[in-house]
Length: 238
Image 1 (cartoon, one colour):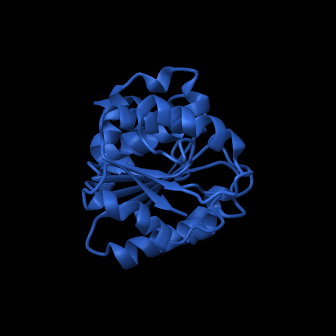
Image 2 (cartoon, helix red, strand yellow; image 1 turned 45 degrees about the vertical axis):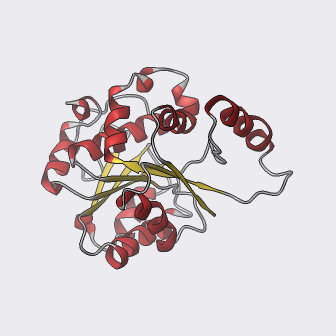
């Protein structure tokens, strides 16, 4: 199984205990104490208020924070049983010593989230930016709903920018992606997205996780992978 190589035995046991879910939200963190508590609360309010009949879980994959981020996530969780936490160190945040597979970083964190989505057979997999100062329950719901309704298989936020803001994106990456793939993808480098569980499982089969270049451009790679596979792509304005 694909998830076996990306998940430690300790995390596997926790996810098996969680069982099958409809929605899985992944929260990759590294020293995000200033914002992460509000983000976690937003996720749980979204779950409780907007998807009360669906099975949900949030997974925190921490890259070795030293500012108390994991502890803040524990205390901010409305329902501790709904939060699964894992660490990029040799010890999970449930104090279970387990080997870690891969190098710390967003690439490995996303692979962990995707593998967890496959193991729990999640229909929707969401990745939330822990630094988002404006993250709200409404914004989390906006990422989940179109995929949950099967309207799209990959959904990404896009931002209204001043012409002088984000020049690398607006003047180079965006037009290049549009020219190569013929799709109006405004934020090819965005940190947040949602996708179907089917796409997450597909990505696990690809060789992108072992390539050095993916460590620096995994967001772009996932978006172009979705476009190249002909998936229904959606965007929401921020």
